[in-house]
Image 1 (cartoon, helix red, strand yellow):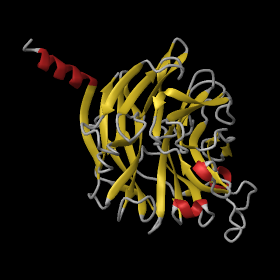
Image 2: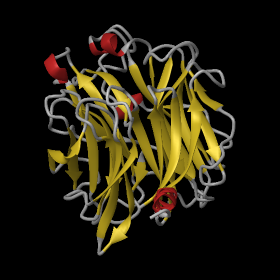
Image 3: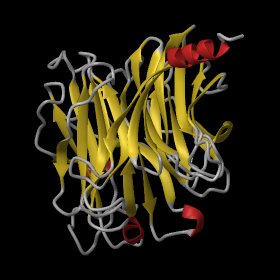
Image 4: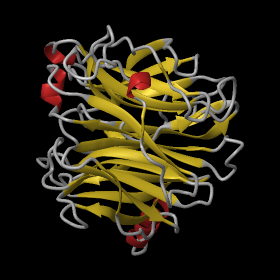
Amino acid sequence: MKYLPFLFLLLVNLAFGQEVAVFTSGTEGHKSYRIPAIIALKNKEILAFAEGRVNNSGDFGDINIVMKRSADKGKTWSPVKVLVNYASLQAGNPAPVVDMLDPEHPQGVVYLFYNTGNNHEGEVRKGNGLREVWYIKSTDQGNSWSEAVNITLQAHRPFQPTANPAYQFKEDWRTYANTPGHAFQFQHGAYKGRIFVAANHTAGDPQPQYRDCNAHGFYSDDHGKTFKLSTNVDIPGSNETMAAELSDGRMMMSIRNQRGDIKQRILAYSSTGGASWDTAYFEPSLPDPVCQGSIITLGYKKGKAIIASCNAADEKKRDNLTLRISYDEGKTWVKNIVVEKSADEKKRDWAAYSDLVIIDKKTIGVFYERNGYAEIVFKSIRY
């Protein structure tokens, strides 16, 4: 019996690797860091991205996109590097992806999609402001980056009659945000090579319970030269989303329900590579407090994609960050691992936004906000 505590700690250490605070609020030139995103490179290094909020923790203001690098599976990290600085305005929602199928770049091209904005979300939602869509790319594993490319006219449908005449579409989209978290590239099937970026927008005048909000996506079949928009997910209030590849050229998105009437993740499925949606529904086995969540394809077993999902699995508050594994492409979630949970039941916003990265065949890296957004932490988990 005296060895039981030791055995318990050993099992915990086997399941959970080293925990590291990658971004800590109030350090390295930023009052707050939020909105984590993470990817792995072909050389096994990891790139971690976030919004670096210069003056405060607010969603609008002087916000940069920052990056750190790890060459040892997340044990140690480089100093902060500012990738996008939109002067005193907002640059945010980093959505990185590695294009591993461009024949001109066998080591991969890293794309970082992001948004800029010139007003608070509430004002943009009322038509008083503009959100734009951009990307930068790197052909040397994230060491240097290209000039920014504006793809707003391809990936967004804003109506701005008093601004640029080019931004005049019938749809009248207003607020706009990439995923947040990583984008992905199809590795198999009819859409092999397609880069897909999950996103969301509001359209027209504000409606009660965010019924003017819808999830959608945009994609490229020519290695970032051009982009096309998907149709909307047909659930009003569908908001922040992340996508992953399934088998047979299909894909799924895990979506935040901004309305908050049903405290569950929305799952949407596409058989057209994300161009349109076959079905979308609320998933009772994925409870959610109205927050962002993340998914990733881990591999395949018996022809089916193995999917990992991570979100704050508490209907009342952002806490109880839980990693779930599905071996049947989202029909059931049979493995559940609690990544982070506050010991104080009254504690709110203890574990919020997250993103996932594959470390090796049995290890997932979870990159997530913790402790009232005081830090963004990396933790490796065996599954």
